[in-house]
Length: 100
Image (cartoon, rainbow, N blue to C red):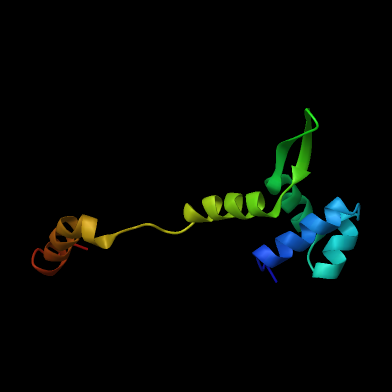
């Protein structure tokens, strides 16, 4: 449950969308929610120029890059070392000055 799509699954989605399969059928085969596949299609859809016409296409590589960019900012980036002086001050006040 709540498992992210990997690159191989994204390529599968790309091929099935190009073949005209429904998002529901793709979701069923992958064992994922239809909403997950819809969001992936939205994430990886880019404008391609084909025969001098702009065409919206889902491309697995673009979906993977967008996913990775989004995941980069999703982790807790707190670095205790950067606030070490403050933590030492608080520890001192609690231990020595009996602050609560």
